[in-house]
Amino acid sequence: QVHVVESGGGLVQAGGSLRLSCAASGNIFSINYMGWYRQAPGKQRELVAVIISGGSTNYADSVKGRFTISRDNAKNTVYLQMDSLKPGDTAVYYCNIREMVGPLRYEYWGQGTQVTVSS
Image (cartoon, rainbow, N blue to C red; front, side, top):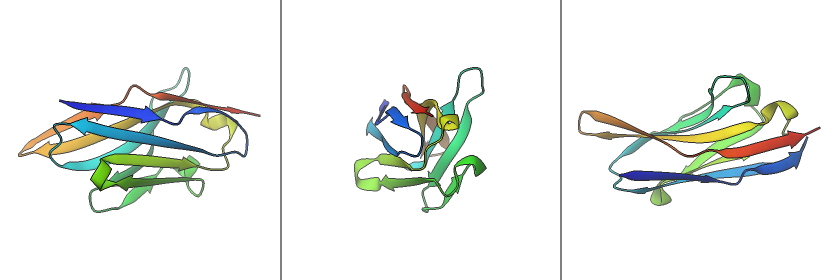
């Protein structure tokens, strides 16, 4: 079983920064995908940023140039550095980790961490 725990959320003023962390632990085989998603009240969960095993990254248009995703493979940890935050970034942020075990794909979600940006 794999456990995923996020941390680093909080309340920040517009223009400020936060850094989210997500650590995976347990019976980990081969993580090939680490991503951050967010869900604002009344809206669907959306992809924010993803980093895959080769190191390639992808970002939602709304956060390009402001957010940076990175990872520490030795610690099975992914980070999301969020700069120039806007009130529209307010949401619960979730970490999503995927791994392949032979031909099977497993997916794990964290419990979420609240990010609130005040104007």
